[in-house]
Image (cartoon, rainbow, N blue to C red):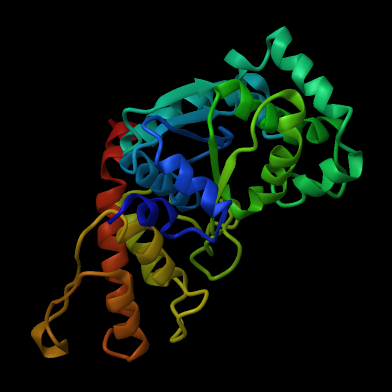
Length: 314
């Protein structure tokens, strides 16, 4: 796969595509994603993890910001609680394949006078309404937002300049914050970053993914728990918004060349699929039973999470 196709597969938007092409032509290029340490690493995180692995293969230097101060500002716990999670999250990311990358703890770079001055400068340019709108998709308890949550997107913008990266990766829920960065970073002497956005995939029940709703698979789940959760997963005949197909598209096929659906001979025997499109077409045509699709997704997820599970339960 050519570098551009690798960099853009399984994305919903690249801002801007021509800028990404120019970046790919450079001998040195860098990208980052930030993660709040706020709980177990799960399938939702894995979408951007897989994209960062694609970008690393496409020639980017990758930085992971473990955003402890952002988690604190977003009311995800005390600093002590968050810092305990930060190192654990880093180990999980490494076990999931993000090795050979630069890990940065937010509080190590965000408490300098230079950083704080940049935040204050940008705070003069951005209205409260614009800051609030940028947080609508990512903020906690936004029906009663705090001032800290208005600082959050401004810090995220300054992170890009501080880390000296040329591209940012995030779910499409990060779009408004990234657009603020593209608009305002040039005013503090830093170029607008290329922004690469991945989709927000459904939870196992077909609804919004949430750890509190119990519709996720996380690195802490045992093989038996993964199999049990996948067996109960929503898997309608339709292709759109099908969480089992989404797992195959965004998690399995980026990591395997060929996926094998294993089944008894009386049900057609094993079937090999070299692309996600091929397995999607077979399912849409009724050639694969929903239970076989679920078992296939479960088997590969167990494999993908194996190193992380060993790291946790070690």
